[in-house]
Amino acid sequence: MPSTVQESLRSAIQIGAPLYNSGDPAGCFKTYLEAARQVAEGPVATPSERSILRTAIERAGGVRSADEGAWVLRRAFDSIISGAAAAQERAAAAVAAAGRPGAPVEFEVLSFEEGLPAAPRWRVLDDVIMGGRSQSQGLSYDGADPAAVFSGTVTTDGGGGFASLRSDEWGGFASLSSARGIRLLVKGDGRHYKLNAKTDADWDGVQYQQDFVAPPEWTKVDLPFTDFKPTFRGRVVPNRPPLQGQQIQQLGLMVSKFTADGGVIKGFRNGSFRLGVRWIRGFV
Image (cartoon, rainbow, N blue to C red):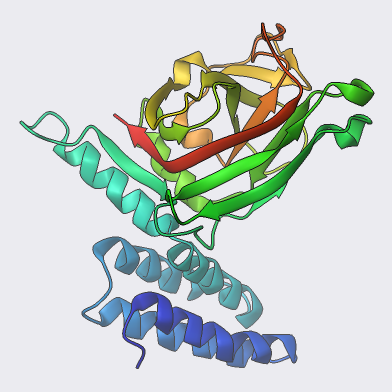
């Protein structure tokens, strides 16, 4: 049997997914259920992983079809493999220890110190969608620093003026329900950037934004949820409730000529940009 929980679940998917795709959801369901039981009852899984798998096994036992049961288990597997379960476990431990002498006041959500995690994926969203000419390079990895890097060129030519990345929906952001805000370790070029947070899985629509400056040395930046502003296409949306950590489903990074409240950044310049991010944490 594979040596880690993630390897065990990936092995089950490698067997079960072809069965499902070939028209045998019952065979897929059986494969997933056996793997879930073995991992949940084995010595390697963490308490959080066991809880996720046992809940999925119970739910899968009450569904109407093998097809539905297979998907219940697959979503549980994906949550563990993507690191979402581990992120939630770290948050729970930090909250449980809060108030004790020497207790941590932060917990890791995503780390880029050893490479880019498999999940979530990050997608480019630049001003070319509105006729602009800015261009970001996607999220890359600098092993010498080490950190994730958001870089490219931003320009107001063509009527634009922003470049951005946005993550896919990821269950690990649920760990932020225990936090008062998000802490970043960043190194940049002195430019103003934004951290964006979306409370749904849609690509368009309202997102919450907060500005920060990235100096040319590694710096911790604290972004309390109470300071995020709800915006839609560069304009503040009135009468929206404050951002709460448990609502966050996607995060994003942006460089823009505009501040989060719609003003123009003083001294904004066209040209290249580079932002390094070593980790993203929640603080309590």
